[in-house]
Image 1 (cartoon, rainbow, N blue to C red):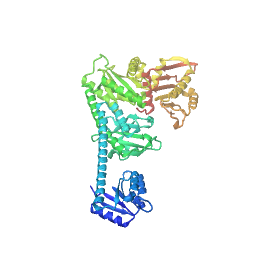
Image 2: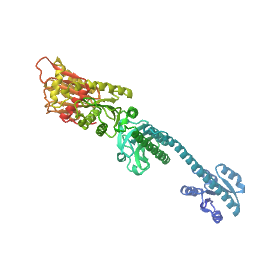
Image 3: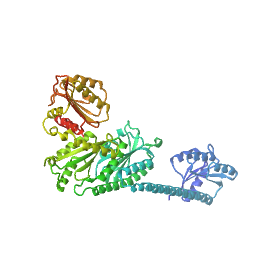
Image 4: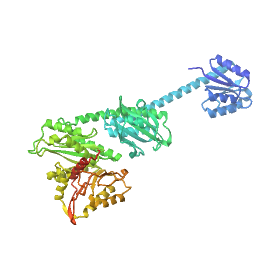
Length: 604
């Protein structure tokens, strides 16, 4: 340890030089000043273990100097030097905070011994404080490790993510937290898995990459344990603490903490605790991801490699929890294999290839499970009814060879969407069963000409043969009602094809004007020659289509009830044939045939 530094204060040069000489010879580092004002100035700039001051000085005396020092430096040791006649004043100075006093005249040994004892006591105090601080820090780290190791008690990724985010918020006293995790080890795509506090979910990206996090909020996060970044002006908090989560060398997630209690900034100590907690949390999440991967492999059918139905049901329950929390949709798709004439089961090798073709048509986030030889199920996260229709078309194209190998061989589909068709597994399962039976009795299945190729105009004519004769004005009423209905359900996504023909075009345009300013997630495709709409209206106008412009029809497919209406090309009487149906399988088939023939792009 270095020399103890002493500041000697005395207005008499003789005593200053005497004290400096005695204490310097004894091994102390001594500085001297001639007044209390000068002493206070020196203490502002430098640190001293002991201040040795005379009691009686012109201007600021020793007592006042003690008081002023204690106000600024409560832990500073101050020794008063006084004559025998001023002992009472020295005692009063000690009451003000002086550590000790020395009587004049003093000899060399007494002065050195007194200062030496004070310096030794001070070193002991400093060492004790350091050890206490180290012990407190150690106990804090031990406590943090105890809290963090609790994360290893679960191997379910989603509940673990909730606990990890809660722990990070508690360590930093952050009231708001958001956590994105990779779907699996090695994936750069991150999904929103947990939130805490008052978070505007609609403004948070549901999916984001690590590079996008860096570019949008915190450049340099890849090489840091944490970064405090200023958030955009429209954010509720001004700054946030970003923490990367790693499992070994792999990046697996990002946590964002904000809204500190009482609006305080993130202190260095809080960041250190959060970094340690995140480090252990990353290991725990990585273990859970590895366990999930092993579980998935162990729960696959040995022949087809599709997951088991039990695993699918657990995955659906987890998806329901996430969907409830984050307000997104997902769908279940049932895929039934009809073997065709004779009912013979597909050979194992052929079935394995078929399942692989189905999986290839799905996305990486989708999960395919097998319930039996001819029944398969797919969990489609963040997918609505229209998105399911897009994926069904992909599967049909990918498996067309299998379906065409023998008469009657076909793949049939039924879908249910959360929350439109149910918000629990049992309810979604019942809707799947109902739609499966409905698909078997659908006009699409029982009237082969409706599903065959060729112009859709021929299919429309076939449907009119199955329709009823209604007053001619019913067509216009139906067109207007269907259009208004999609605006009554603005959150439902779908696609609506409207062809008013020349008879009902003015009435339909009037309805559009009445609905001006309202929004809907349904894409409206209007087939009408000579009509132009503002591009911002959300209505896609097709003026020259391959369909007969005289025919009126309305086809809606999406999250709401499916509906189709087809009218006659020409009507000269007061009554005319009209076909109407809520046959979901038929309406879906018509909607996607129109989408393909008219070149309308529909996304998942």
